[in-house]
Image (cartoon, rainbow, N blue to C red):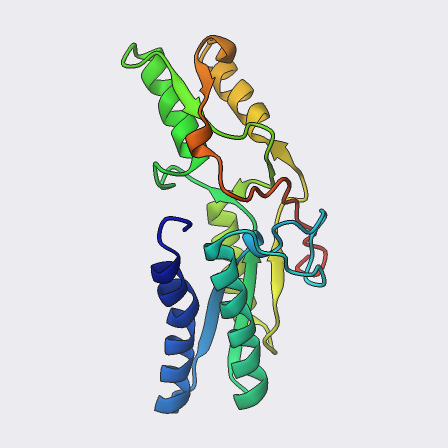
Length: 204
């Protein structure tokens, strides 16, 4: 998002308001799920829950904070059934190849197959709370089945560093990650988010 801050703000931020306003103006009675993100917490120390102050560290997370509060505002101002799901990282085989988890697993597979020898990554010390996407989609659906709209964190409560993820992935393939992984500063963000670990007590 640092490469396209204006586009990010227009789509991720204003896009939500366009949807909310379309529902309001049309007068239809429906339920709205807004995909919020753990990235909104940014520099706020873990564990993060619904009461943790937002401290976004990227154009994407800034836009997500805007979307979050727009959803709350429309809910309070117009009585709309609109919820924010604050989802922490969730993975599946459908994960896009630009994301670090997919980049790691794809890199391990290619190295194992002899198609490449090196995997270049950024900050290995970043800690994230990784869950399983199908379970998180079920949580989204459940939010929309509640009697009253509210906002919920969805997370595992466990933090895993990128380094640990790398170690496990290479070990699973019978490889030594230290022989193949190289640090590349181009994958560092201008402002890093050190640790995102969720507290999903409210959703439970």
